Image (cartoon, rainbow, N blue to C red; front, side):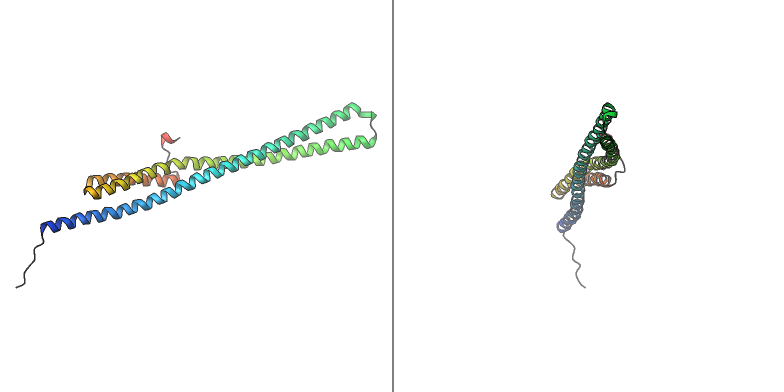
Length: 195
């Protein structure tokens, strides 16, 4: 008859420890992937927020220049009408015709700038809304990054200490971090302290 080899209890315990360590190490790798995705989302949200702010500021500057030109043309039109009123009958037909054409052109230009500035104002406000959306996403990514980093550290400690409770803490931290990361992308809910 062949002999049956009974495993050494010490070897079984070492295999069990290695099994736990391997699984925790694999889960830690998943945490690292989630952290990379979170970091990417946070960086993109910050970039888009700054870009939208810069574009909005540019649009408001453009708006201000349109407002100034509108006022200049309105003043020019009023000044021209004042000259027509003051000099009225003393002007030659040609001079009066020129002043009337200048007044009409000034009014048309002022009207054109008034319309253009409204379009620019609308575009600026859209960019501000876009900026605000990215601004509201950014903190979720920040908190998610912190929680995922904590999860990685706790998982490493769990491997070293061979501690299931510490590993469970890392799982909870990673789960909350993942929820916050997904919310950073989708804005499903708003945390009251982030308003």
